[in-house]
Amino acid sequence: MSSRRKFIKKLGITLPAITLLGVQAYEVKGASILAEKKKTTPIKPVVISTWKFGFSANEKAWETLEAGGKALDAVESGVQVPESDPNVSSVGFGGLPDRDGNVTLDSCIMDETGNAGSVAFLQGIKNPIRVARMVMEKTPHVMLVGKGAQDYAVAEGFEIEDLLTDKARTRWEEWKTDANYKPEINVEDHDTIGMIALDKHGNLSGACTTSGLAWKMHGRVGDSAIIGAALFVDNEIGAATATGKGEAVMKTVGAFLIVELMRQGKSPQEACELAVQRIIEKNPDSKNFQVGYLALNKEGQTGAYSIQKGFTYNVFDPNKKEQMQADHYYETDVRSY
Ligand code: GLY
Image (cartoon, rainbow, N blue to C red; front, side):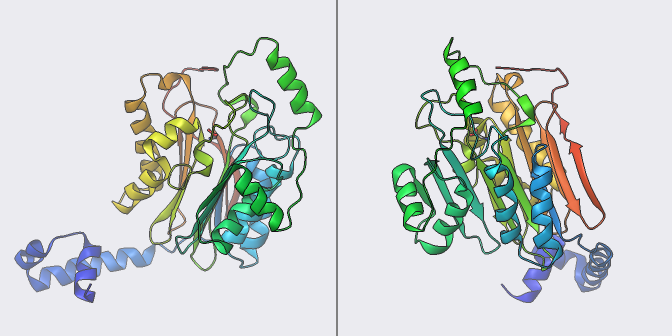
């Protein structure tokens, strides 16, 4: 694309319109837009993550970002905090199992070059995000699943461990007494950790990792392993991540949708709201489940929105380190579905 065409594209007006406007008007308008752009210095670094447990994940990621490190390294190290924490019952070690008592993990990662890696239905590996990164960087593939993903992790030096803690086993035993499949919204302020970051170099990356829905069917894979659903990064535009009912996110390709909406000029907040709106339009039962979205653009602006109230998220930038409640669509306090 010629530089004039690129410039015209930036102005957001078509060639015939430019011709009609004439060169002088075009230059005046261009100058004012450029001046406006100059005023908004990007905020960086920035890291944003889901749920209360994301705060300590942000603290870990911030160490890398503050030191001038890469967003990719920051998000990978950040999400390992809840992955390794046995008290977090929805991510990694200590995650609640499927209905047959197996802890099965989904994770994905995406970097500033558009590279992506993921693992799904992975068992016995405490930090699946590290395996996802290896899939991205060391294999010709994007996604490995199940036994193949585990074999690959072992070949890379990972140990197979029992991820079902006594606490999670007890809860599973309790659940089995009536085996009622009724997962709850926002319980313990937990679900997937999704984290997206913009580093000092202006590059974006993201990571997402979960043990998925408690008591899910054996073999179920959710959005957290699916690039475009729970995570998408386009270094020209921005990044987005998702938490909540993975099936609803997958069916609307939520994170990709948010990034594309930002490409069309929406702010991160507007893009998250439109993506939630899309789920509500497509799901007559949307009152009964939760989905939360986070977005971050190249300017370091953030957005957060969820279907239900109770979606906590964390934003760190040079001016703040805050835990916040996302705006949400339904005011009613729906607790379960
Ligand atoms: N968002 C997590 C899952 O549905 O598995």
